[in-house]
Image 1 (cartoon, rainbow, N blue to C red):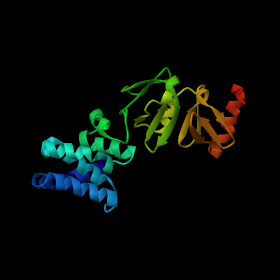
Image 2 (cartoon, rainbow, N blue to C red; image 1 turned 30 degrees about the vertical axis):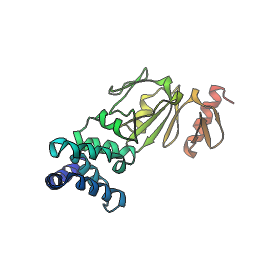
Image 3 (tube, helix red, strand yellow; image 1 turned 30 degrees about the horizontal axis):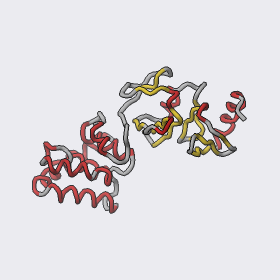
Image 4 (cartoon, helix red, strand yellow; image 1 turned 120 degrees about the vertical axis):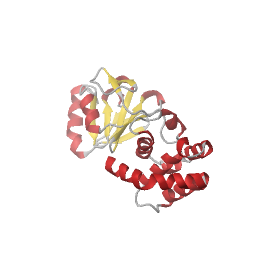
Length: 218
């Protein structure tokens, strides 16, 4: 990924800056059009170009603000948003940019889950505040109780599973880890937590029901 980023930077950055100097708004509109129409084989170049356009050092302040206003059109999923931020400032997620996005709110670059191992701290979350965790490739979305905004962080499901207490948490699907005490109801192939139905994967089913029996759930 980083090699790919370097190649994008080397080949396109100077051209993007030239376009921005000529007509910043038109450049941003072209980036958005390429991304939304699927004309680019991958979305990474569009994310990179928008990251350059959103940096005042490479264009005017008006262009930068306009580029940020179009962010949700190019960064349409959480992974896109984190890729955009990696292009923009290397590795640190810019929380101001995240707040401007309509897609992901309350997102951070790292996380520390208290009382159950450590992860690099950027936000502290009590395990008891977690309802379930959803896997999104190399990111996880931590869904919290009481309707709080979910937290997106760059971490694999395997790493998250290793950090969480097996007494409280269990993986029930390749894309879901749940907190046992947050279960509202369950069936053979699904678990309900609040208003969310979570699938139970076939390879996880036996272990899930074994744990349920041990806990005395019915």
